[in-house]
Length: 165
Image (cartoon, rainbow, N blue to C red; front, side):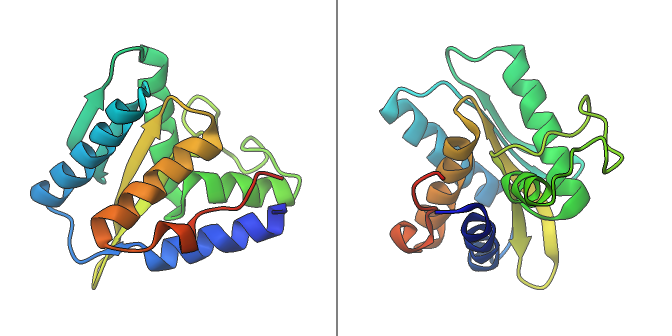
């Protein structure tokens, strides 16, 4: 799958994976679902589910470091700024030959790498993000998409990205 196909598929994921609401119960369900998947697969992740300005779920699994928490913060800043997945933003910039600095963003504050996904709610739009850090960026992104599919009863096989280009 090429860069443009990935960008189009991520846009499809963002349109398809919308929550009816984001409250503490939904955040807990999503966060614990990702935690359970990570533990079953032996993954070391930091997991963050937030409404913008308000953390709702946070877990740092064994094997993570403070650096993972920083990646979560920087990736979720991209979602808060653009209301798009951090991976989609990064791939879009890459397709245009742009860097975060050229877009006016400090790499100390923004990371357009995979792993943060916008949380859309019906009637309100993007109200938060779900973010993981600990895997290669494409795998971080896909783990979040897989968990959202499971939570929403969507078929992950039809929404997942193809093989990396």
